[in-house]
Image: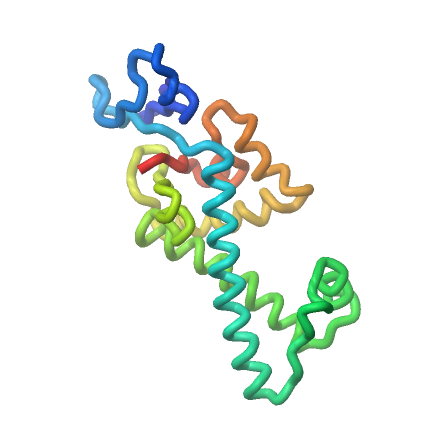
Length: 186
């Protein structure tokens, strides 16, 4: 268990260790702080995949609707992939680039609104985790936006900001450090 300010952090591995005196305990500490169990890398990865699937389905429906209204063809599924995205970014028309920018805005808004209003996204709710700030409270919309923009920083260099979660003793990624947040087991 690690004490970081008002929040005492316990990893999932320590919580499952039967020799640990405080294994699995969540509640108030004697000094008035909050004792929580942080979520590990794989649980967070599953939640992120679920959220990505929700976002892609939502964006696909919006893209299909807008292409129908504008009488533009959608790309075939066989065309989609990383090389298609690079080709669009380099040679794409204004409409396609606008679509990619709207997808980025939709993703940022999805994470910011869900984390700020509810404390968890659809994926996080499914795997039983949520996001709190350094004081154990639900995120404000401002801190939630900062965390969402932190996802961009975490993605920049080969997703190292996300992989950091697997090696950090508090199981926090770059975006968590930027916004002073923790992802905990509910």
